[in-house]
Image 1 (cartoon, one colour):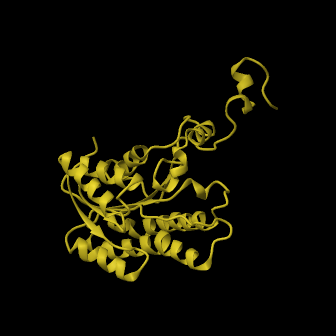
Image 2: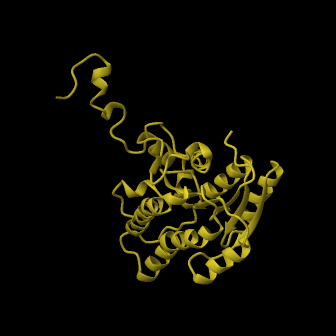
Image 3: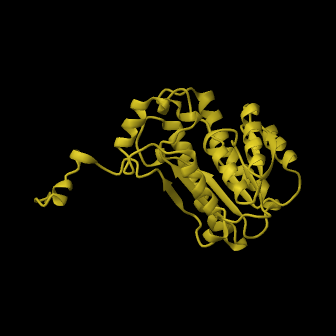
Length: 263
């Protein structure tokens, strides 16, 4: 198992879903994890309780990362101690898709883009050389869906990761981005419908929807010493979502059956 003993980690948006799975996975590897939440206090306490039941250590901090005051609250809760690992997971989607209102657009970019940037900026004085930053993006950046603002914000996150990796490389700090596919979480409640989950499985190479633990394992790896030579990368963790036609719709199946293929 990845060893993060003695390291301090911050996971934003860690009350539920992918964030909770990441917080629990880092704690299981030995890190002391700060579980950030905005409104879901009961869920955040459940996350911390799960960490502690498993023998891990952690703490809670509440902050609205869409505001400057919230960033102050976050770092006041963290204190001035060492911070080895930052996982920027907190995110929001818009209610509208192609008809999003200006205020909602601004709020989405404040949470999804502005907050991760300033979280890293304010974390750097607390971070030793060799620290780790992992940003959570989305498969929406490579698939042309109608969630314009959300996809745009995640595209900005990926660009930020590459630039930060180049800037912070002189300190041995790695910055990588994980891009989940369709994963069961509070943001994708519609996947609880078995028919919807089955439909996603049919366009995923590994044949199912993602689970938060699938993402958490990759984040823990990137936070570890084993990933010391990986930086500036966007890692697709989607099970092969929408790689191409599957089943009878795949023209290359004929090759496997011993008949002529296309071309």
